Length: 132
Image 1 (spheres, rainbow, N blue to C red):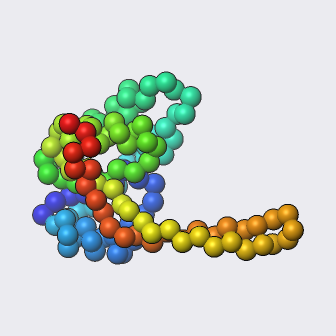
Image 2 (image 1 turned 30 degrees about the vertical axis):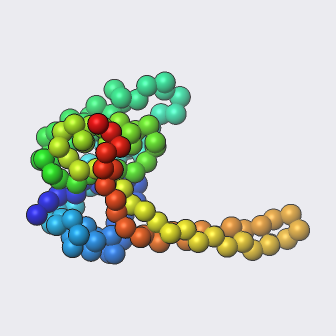
């Protein structure tokens, strides 16, 4: 059985937990500690480079994860790329969730339209050979 480390800003749905348990042999779900969740949720947009900003996340994973553990990585694209690269180099399995999106529009007035978006989990995917 494996652990899954959750590097994203949402809570897993029951369907997502069930898929991770049944399809990926996960038996433990590890959330980021609050201070690292703040780091992950607030990647500085003004910085030209963010690798050093993520160092505490890298150190935490090295301390907590073992080879073949899963890391659910979703967020700011540059940070995701760096974390996927880090995971692959250290033997962790980076994954991400796919969703089905349904959008509906409602005219509230001549000047205003309300958009409603519903995201439904479809499946998790590995990053496979995205980063060597």
